[in-house]
Amino acid sequence: MVVRVVPNEVPVGAQIESLDLSVPIDDASLNIVRTALDAHGMVYLRDQQLTPAQYVALGRRLGTLEKHVFDQFLLKDQPEIVVLSNIVENGQQMGVADAGQFWHTDGAFNTHPHIYSMLHAQEIPTDAGGEPLGDTMFVSTVHAFSTLPAQLQERLRPLRGLHSLIIQYEKKKTSGIGRHVPLTPEQKARTPDLYHPVVWPHPRTGRECLYVNEGTTFGLEGVPAEEALALIRQLCEHISRPEVTYHHKWRVGDILIWDNFSTQHKVNFNFGPERRRRMHRMTVS
Image (cartoon, rainbow, N blue to C red; front, side, top):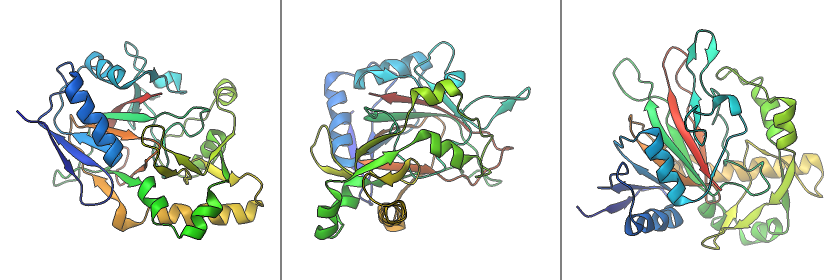
């Protein structure tokens, strides 16, 4: 069966059809996935039945897998997988419950951010009519930068943005989403604040990506705080305009792979703790 790549109508994302990821992926199929990621920023494949070990093997074909800073939520037998979940069992939180509440790019608080992230849907919340809740939304940072006025593009190119996981988790405390798990002193020490280019050429394609997001960017080097925050808000609003946003309607078994330079994402938290949601996430360095 011929593998097909079907782009979304908005300028981010594509569906890959007729590819069974439970079978070790061959070089030709891997090249299709990489090429689609370069072109569209995010790809999704429906109804993929993989064991955690098969999922990890797939991730390793894309590159070196990294372990999440939240050690307590790593899958016991496959620590490359971090569990994202609102499920509480015997009073214990079973995964990161508040991940994705702000527009963000995974790993922006790392010296060398992740290039890819992957999600495999294990349990999806639904409404009374059976419709999926908790869409994950995506936008293109390449499209965002390319549609800015040329004068603003020139202003942004030499700037560097301050990224902070520590400030993000302080911000999450008051959001009321999920069961917030604070960072430990050791986790804070592993993720110090740092600066990244506001305009970052993509490491594979060279296309300019607008690397500013509402989840982790809290300042601009050399720019007064009030002016910097106003510009960050302006850019974030431009990046996440509704008309350029893709909403992924989840089904159990879906696998999403996205590029953390050329996209941003966010979860629609339109479900409560009584509706179970569980995802397996991996990141590729």
